[in-house]
Length: 223
Image (tube, rainbow, N blue to C red):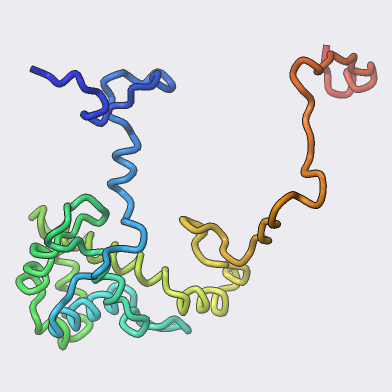
């Protein structure tokens, strides 16, 4: 028998917005599953030296250094990866949905320790094979690797500095605005009461109708 507990089923009990059906799942749940947990896991997942070398090589292959930009391995991409792979004792519910046991098994089995010492062409070919694989697990593994690399790399202050320095369009780039906003770019709120009147409003009951002058009506074709 179907459950009648809407909240337990993750279904929004509020009135349906924009004509959504009452049986639609709460869209906020889907949104949460597409976002990484803020700050990652603490303590982080621990990789062997071989696994760490392989993951560094993967990141350096996906985002090669050059043009004033550092290699991912130079900005400690492995530290980011270790915090965003879900530990074995935690529920697998955060993007990129990489569970420790399976992720490590795939690093060892689909890439192997030799990947770290392979040529760039060979590493690229291996990653392309995973990306284009008809095997869902292999293709999903590549997406996890790519996501962890991109998210980790562009979160590093060294990369933000490179964007500002090397890219004309990045001169005023202050880093990703979410989830912390533009830190250091907004004046602090004053303590206690505001020194100045922050503004005002007209109560609804006090709003009155005005007559629009004829010249403005004519200019904007208002009847």
